Every structure is written in structure tokens, then in C-alpha cells.
Image 1 (spheres, chains in turn blue, green):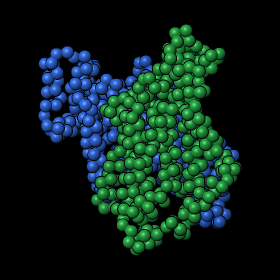
Image 2 (tube, chains in turn blue, yellow; image 1 turned 90 degrees about the vertical axis):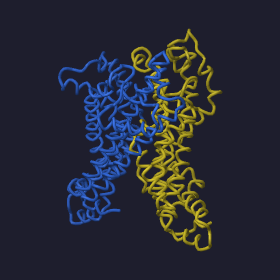
Image 3 (cartoon, each protein chain N blue to C red; image 1 turned 180 degrees about the vertical axis):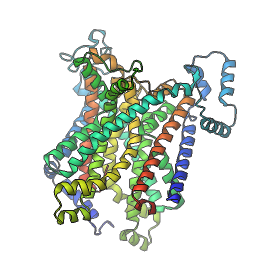
Image 4 (tube, rainbow over the protein chains, first blue to last red; image 1 turned 30 degrees about the horizontal axis):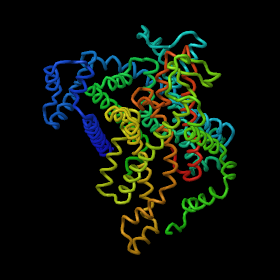
Length: 315
Length: 297
């Protein structure tokens, strides 16, 4: 277990290192340096100011030094400086994290509570009319852009409720905030729930084909006992990995959903930073997202290895 | 050809070619959902090809009198704030969606197949490096990577295609690699080696054609993702630039404020995106059942 853990940890660090280089290079292949862009974007005027900016960003240093400076700063929690609000980026990001975290947690909850039971039912009733309907429903769920779904929900609220669930200011009570966030969370979570349902169904079908399920049937166990006692318990294991797959999948949904519902979260901040062409902040936020996604996957892998000893001996 | 051998998957591979060409009726009966998906995709392809003939207005022509015109009359799907005809914009928007979808998917598949084939067939350090690179790309959410690439490259049709194609690469590379690993050990590859073919020709002429089935399935699934990502990028204002009519950008222009006043500006472009993606997903599912039932997406 220890060697497995260390190997996975090293791989994780290697992946994050690669991503950091990739992002660093990607944001530097643009013609013109970041100072030029910020110069335009922030509406600065004098050449002296531009030189000051270049020095401040360390653009006069060699590229390797720039990279090392960036990573060092990141490790110390230095997220750079947003030129639009003229504040340290960390001050902008920190209050946004709980909002996005609540939204993401609600969306995951929604997708699991809807996706897992429907996936199980669909597998148990394979090739019945119900299975057919559920499969078409999950495919349609995967085909709806989350931002459009968000707009449709807003439209329905305007039509039938007369008000819009827009996040104007943080509600005083946690409960009210969660209630307000649950609507965008459903919009972001629906696509994930369709994904969860499909993966649950196929994982369940695979288990239902196993010998021990046949044995259970042969010895006369009731269908309910076979399906839920023998099959579901074993199918739950692969379902855990779905949470890992979902982490990356959900971020895309959060980006557009926070934009549609005007939620002051991290994901919308990334879009805003990209629009302002505030590349130092974009670079840091993308790294932040990558760290979260990679860590979630790492934790899922660990949970999996603990629950299923076979994993550790593979490869 | 050297593809004559036994084994379920390959018999299937041979039969399906005959099956598909010989009876379309069989496909319709056996896979009604897939047939519905194919019909939707076909309709959208026709809409894109015939956009010039099936519309009256220029999709970019503005008309102050038609501003926010309700659906009906000269504008069957209404008009936007600038008086541009929605039906024209949706029909021409199909061209953009398909161009980006097919372009990004093809590019992503070409790169992914090359990486997957090379790393699977030759293995060694090449495989190791390629796999770590795929890990990196996969750790970044599709939309985030596409957003950053599109922003870094600048807004243009070609750049959006490139920005969407790269995040599609890892899935293709992984599937092709695992298929190649399996095919590499097949007797027909050994036979080709025994008659003195060089490794590159074996990889290209014997291994590559046998990865076609999973590739077709994957490409169809990726097409739907590519269309969705393009729509999301354009919705966020970082996709296809003016004057191209893009379904995603039509929603960003008309977004929240028109939810109240002009719902048709929100409903139709979203419907177009969803239908296009739904069609490719239905078709993709049926193709998966036919070509490669073991591949789960």
C-alpha cells in the first residue's frame, strides 16, 4: 500500500508539474508579452508605467527564472494581482471559494441522488420499456448545454413565479443560501446526473454478468436479494470512480452556470479574468483548478485501493 | 488482405461491413434510436449545405424595423435585437457548428490516433512520455483547456477548432493505444513480421485499419462534445467571432435580459444545439452497439 501511495503521489506531482509548464508556455505563445496586453486592458498610458509593469511582473528576467518565481509565489499563496480591481488576486478569490464549493457540493449531491438509483433501475430492468425511456432521458440530459438549461429555468421562473433566483447578495442564513444555490446546482448537476446514470448502469450490468451473481440466482436467492445484496454492493465500487470523472466534468458546467445565474464564484472569476486578459490571474486559477481535479482523482484512487485490495497489485 | 482471421470481434468487424451496406432496413429495425439520430444529423447536415436556398434573409443583415420581431410572418422564428432573421441565423449557424465540430473532431482524432498508435505499438520510453502527457491534458477540464487555448490563440474559426481539438486527444489516444496493445500480439501481425514487413508498414497497414471500429464510435461521441464546447465558448464570448452566426453566441447576445421579453431568442438556438448533440449521441450509441459493444463511454 505504501509503495502504491508513493508512486501515485509522485505521478500526481509530475502531472501537476507538466500542467504548470503547459499553461505557462501556452500563455506565452501569444504575440506580444503580458505587459502589452495588460497595458491595453487596464488602459494605462505612459511608457514608464509599462516598464514598471514589466519589472513588476518580472518579464525582464529569463523565462526559466520567471517560471521558478511563479511556482515559488504560488507555493506561498501568492496569486498575483488583479489589474482590474487593483487588489491582490487572492483577496478576490478567497471569498468566492465557499460559494463555488457549496454549488459544486449541491450539484454532486443532485447528480448522485438522481443518477445512481436511475442507473441501477435501468440495469436491473435491462431492455424493458423503462430502461429504454431512462436511456433516452440520460442521452437527452447529456445533450442539453447547461447554460441553456439554466436560461430555461430562469424563463420558467419568470413565467410562473414572477421572480428570478439570481444571487444578488449573500443571504444571511446558510439555509437560504443553499436554497438559492440549489436551482443553479440542478442546472449544472443534470448533465452530471446523466453521466452518473450511464456509468452506474454499465457498471451494474457488468456485475450482473458475474459468476457469483449467477451462483446467487442458482441457489434460489430472491431477485431483490441478488440485485441489491450481491450486485449493487459490488457495483458501488466502480461508482466511486465516477466521482473522480465527474470532478473534471462538473467544472465545465460550473463555469457556464455561474455565468448564467450571475453567481460570484471562482469559475465565473476565471471567465472574467480571461475576458480582461488578466493572464497572471488566469494562469494561477487554471493551476488551482488542476490541483483540485488531480487531488480529487488521487483521493478517489486511494479510496478505491483501500476498498479493493486487487488494485494495489496491478501493473 | 491480412485481416482474415478468427475471433469474435473481428468476425463482427467483417460482418458489420456487409450488414451495413446490404441492408439499411435491418439497421432501421434493429436500432430505431440510432436511425432517429442519423435522421437528425442528416437533417442538420442538409440545413447547413442548403442554408443559402432555404432562407430568405442574409443572416448578418440588420433591419431596424424587425428588431425583436415575434415569430411568424416573414420571420418564422422571429428576429433578434438588430432585426436579424433567427431562422437564417440558425440555418447558417449549422454550418459553423458542423465546421467546428467536424474540424475539431477530425483534428483531435488524427493527433490522438497518431499518439495512440505510436505509443501502443512501439511502447518503451515513447509510450511513457506520451502517457504522462495525456495525463496532463486529462487533468484539465475540457472547457477550461479550450477556454485558455482559445483566449491564448485569439478568436478565429481556425483557432477555435484547434482549441477544441486538443482536449479531445487524450480519450482517442488512450482507446487507440489499448487496442493497439491487443492487436500487436495478434498472429497476423506476427505473420506480417515473419514475411519481412517493416514495423512502420505493419503498424500502418495491419494495426491501424483494425482500430477503425472503436475510432468511428469515439469520433461520433466526440463530435457531440465538440459542438457543445463550441457553443459554451461562444456563449462565454470566447468562441467564434462576428460576423459568423454561431448558435452559442446567439444565446450570449440574447441571454438573461431576453428571457423576459423575447423568449424565442433563447429557445431556438438552444434547441438547435441540443438537437444536433442529441442526434450525434443517439447515432453514437447505436454505432457503439454495432461496432464495439465492450467500449463504454
